[in-house]
Structure formats: structure tokens, C-alpha cells
Image (cartoon, rainbow over the protein chains, first blue to last red):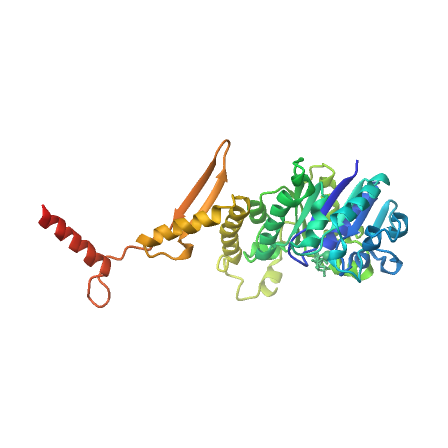
Length: 269
Length: 112
Ligand SMILES: Nc1ncnc2c1ncn2[C@@H]1O[C@H](COP(=O)(O)OP(=O)(O)OP(=O)(O)O)[C@@H](O)[C@H]1O
Ligand SMILES: [Mg+2]
């Protein structure tokens, strides 16, 4: 059975593409046949984060318009077995996508025995974001500890509950996961940033993970490597934990505590 | 944290607290708007207009919350009335409302 997971947020720049890349890579590493689709038509970026930008020939719009086959469009990852990337178009706009067209693509992917389809949503709550979440079985709602991101996440939850295919067909609702990204425990401790508890309280959906603010995310995207492959980094480990939870394993949350500073560091830090 | 903030308790600028409080109100409000029946905004406006006939309140005086319980929906209205001002103003004159109430009291007394 293929599972379709949308990575969404409403607000832009919160870490959807970073998350899509790492979640897809993590699932493939565990042996699941996985494809990650860039729905950000016109603003393609997933290819860069995945490091396959020079191998893009056809894109999602070509596939939707039946100008290229699935086989021609999918890019096979060079590092990880079972991992494929479906890039967005850089020259078209979001109107190039239709629900019927996406439905055909989803059907083809299911027939090709994919275990997971990860959909990297564009920002906003307009057509592009609605298209990305329409076929979702599960949603990873990516949220930063910051007022406008939390508010937008709540709006996206409303859209998942009323405009997804599952809601329209009166099927079991989309399974929701909260992923808090760019978390800075020191600022939380100082009372400057919403805490995990605050956000869970406000959004009231189960917590999939906490990804700390980490310089390795930038290093990795510079190199075109999903941060989950950097097993030394906190962000990489946090994404790996999130995969375990996604697969049903109960794991305690890490990276919530501020590092303890020594006396001198506190005095002069 | 530098030398000057070393002795602070860290409780001085809890802006996250403010953020959470604001979000709590806002999210509840927006959820009502999207889950509630279509007539809810109009109902709210009508109720507000009725209140305004009697009390001078602003548009934010009324909050409407629709909660679904086991087998019924509960519509919760919260109306914030301005503080009754009985004290004399700075100018030493009684306020308009105090004057009116006193007049009504006297009329009742003389009628009985
Ligand atoms: N945990 C993190 N620590 C540090 N930086 C991060 C983290 N997560 C994301 N970033 C940075 O934040 C920026 C935005 O990330 P990303 O592109 O993944 O967001 P997005 O939600 O996909 O944005 P858009 O809405 O534009 O598609 C990038 O520069 C990325 O490197
Ligand atoms: Mg993105």
C-alpha cells in the first residue's frame, strides 16, 4: 500500500523542503521505495537540496501534460537505493497543475510500487498548496516557534480537514503530525521563543519531532545533501528520530534542552 | 547572556508568554470562523448591533465561540461591557449616566 505524505506549513521558509528531503531520504534508507515530489512549480528548489539539479530533464508539469513518461521524469538518487526525485517545473506557473493531472501521476506511482510519496508543498494556502495536500494520507505540519508560523499551521490544518480528498470523500481524516523546526532551546529558556509545550497546546496535534536550529542544515544544503545523511549533526539525528516515530516507534524527544553553560560562559557569553 | 544580565532572573522579558496568550485568542477565533455555520458572522453582527442599542461598546466587545460536545453544539457568547462610571468626572460634574439614574429614582419616588 502506497502512503502519501504532504509536508506543509502555510508560512514560507519554515523548512518544508529541508524536511521533505530528509524524510524521503530517511524512509528510503530504511528500505522503502520512496519518491519526493516538488510541488513548488515556478520555484524549484528540492533538486538543489537533494543535489540533483544538473540531472533535471523533464519535470512534474511535463508529466502531468503527458509530454514525458514517468520513467523519463523520475531522477534516481545516486547515494540511496530506492530514492527518486520528481522535480518541479521552473518555467511554468502553478496553474499548469490540475487535480486530474496529479491524480494520473499518483496512480502511475502507485502502480510502480512506491511505498511512500512525499509531497513538498509550496508556501501559502492557495492552489499550489491545496494541490500538494489533496491526495495526502498523512501530513507533516512544519512549524517554527514563532507567532505567524503557528497561526498559519492552524489554518493549513483547517484546509486539510476540509479540502483534502479524504475529507471530501468522507474517508478517515488525514493523519496529522506536528514537526517543530528551527527550534532554539536557549531562546525558549530565556522566554523569548514559544516552547514545544506551548505549540503542542495551541495546535493540539501529535508531535512527530523537534528539529533544532543547526548550522549543519545550511552546510548540507550548500553541498546538496539532505541533512539526515549528516549523522553527526543534531538536526540529522532529530530527523532520524522523526522517521522512527513516523514508522510507529515510540522514542523520547531530544534536543529540547538548552546546553548548560559553565560559569565563565554565562558571565561573558 | 553578558555580565549585566547575569543576575537577572530571566523572567523580565517573557515575550513568549505574550505570544502564546495572543495566539490562544486568535486561533480560537479563527477556528470558530472556519468550522462554524455560515450564518455565524452575521449572527455575531446582529447580536453586537442589539447590544449597541443599549450600551456603547466597541466591535471587539463580543466574542463568539462554538463548541461541539457529544450530542449538541454550545454557542458561547462573551460580552465585555465598559466599566460603569459612577464617580464624578474631573470637572466635578456627575456623569451623564449617574444623572439619568438619579432622575429615574426621583421620578419613581414621587410617583409612589
Ligand atoms: N533546522 C534548521 N536549522 C537551521 N536552518 C534551517 C533549518 N531548517 C531550515 N533551515 C533554513 O531555512 C531556510 C528555509 O528552509 P526551506 O527551504 O527548507 O524552507 P521552505 O519551507 O521549503 O521554504 P519555501 O516556503 O520557500 O518553500 C533555508 O535556508 C534552510 O537552510
Ligand atoms: Mg520549499
